[in-house]
Every structure is written in C-alpha cells, then in structure tokens.
Image 1 (cartoon, one colour):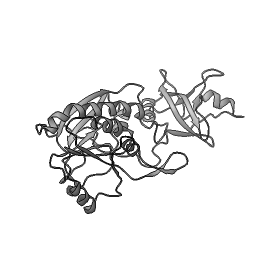
Image 2 (cartoon, rainbow, N blue to C red):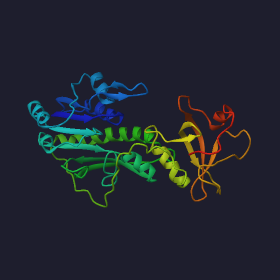
Image 3 (tube, rainbow, N blue to C red):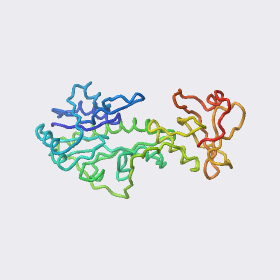
Image 4 (cartoon, helix red, strand yellow):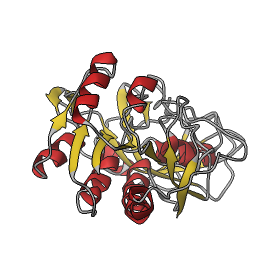
Length: 310
C-alpha cells in the first residue's frame, strides 16, 4: 500500500518510525508543517517529523495549506491510505477523498472525551485518572469520526504534558502496528463514537499566568499541564518566574492568595496561600534568563526576598 503520513511534533515521531517497518507498505510520503520560528533564538526550524523523515530517507512535503492544488498533487501520487498524528491541520473533503482505504488519525485521548487540538493538557488539568489513544477514521468533523481501536494509558500523579505525551506517543505507535494487518487487509472495522463529548481547545495567549485565587489542587494540575509549554509563570516583584515543580500542601492556610508563607528560616521551597484556604508548595522555579533553582536559592540572591506572587 502507498501510505501518506501527516504529523508535526515529537508525538508523531515514534509512529513514523514504526510504520516504515510494517509489511505491505510500498511507499511513504511524509507531509508536515512548514519551518517555523522555534527556541530562544526564534530561528526558523523544521518540525521534528521532518527531521525524522529525512533521517529515514523519506520524501517530505511541507505545504502551507491543503487546498485544491494539494489535493491534485496527492492524486498524482496515487495513495491508498493516510495516517495523521498531531498534524495540526483539518483535512478538507477534497483531500480526504484521495485515500480509497481511508484516512485515519491517532488522536491522543479516549474519544469522544477531549476532541480538539490540546487533549493531553486538558486530561491532566481536569484530573483524569487515565487517558489514551484512539485510532479514528476521519470524517469532515473535528475528531468526530468512527473509532477502530483504543488503548488506555494511566495518568501518573506527577505527569506533565511532556512526560505523558512521550508515553502516549509510544502507545500510539504500538496501536498502529497492532491494527495495521486488519487495515491493510481491508477488514478493519470502526464504530461511531458513543458517550458525551468534551473539547480540548488550544490555550489562548497568556494562559500560563498563574492565578492564586484558585484552589491549590487546581493550580498544581494547571502547572503540570503547561510543562514544558507554554510554561506556567508568575511574578515575584519585577521578576518573571517560571514554575517547574509544585505540589499541594497538606495543611490549610488562611491568607491573601499569592502570599508566600515561610515555615522556617532557610526553607528551600515557597509555601503560597491559594484559594479556599489551601496552599501550594513550589519546589523548583526558573527566573527569567537564569537556570532552574529552588525558591530558597532565589531568595538568597535577593536583597529583599519576595513576600507575594502575582
């Protein structure tokens, strides 16, 4: 079969590496997003899937949009089936029509829960005990197509979006490998999604700012859901602080949300008052332009250690 793979971030790389080893794959065309500014220097760089494809010796195509010209180019390539994994673009009907054996998506949730572009972060911030990967046959909707198979993955209490994404990527690669014999033989069955749907939208600009009026458990999940990106942050006076590690304190605190409560001189963490008389223990931070450090190390470098986060 002639297979088109569409993906962009690291989540898609294990899937790409797995599919090139499958039997009955005659040719693979990789489609990914164009180069974009990345990193601290904001220099243009190709996405991880493009780099992986070139290492594997696969042809790479980076269209700026999937319009009629893209559909025509795909028709000339004569594909049989498509697989997407976090490609980041909705496939229009003219593109979906180019795949006689179907177009499938490895979506990082247990559909219909967390349809949309940000399912891993929303599973963490909502306190889900488990999430997973769904192999869905794509239709004209957004993650609304019938599901052929799912695999469940537990959410660990200390999972960040980064750590959970890595495990889901490996699970996605295994799921595709397991389902490929049925798909390539034309016997893979998909059933309509059942149950209530919920959506996982992208985080808007500024969503990483922490608001300590929220309860500590909500803030702890929010922090983990925004690591490594967009990065949860707060202000300690004039200094922007990225919060890298935090947990819910086991005791109640009565104080103005955002107040730093010091339990003892020389403590290495900040205990911060939050909403509903809860408290957050912040254990690891990264001040703007500096390396990660404990809050205590930051305090020792200040003439007047902060008393409030905002």
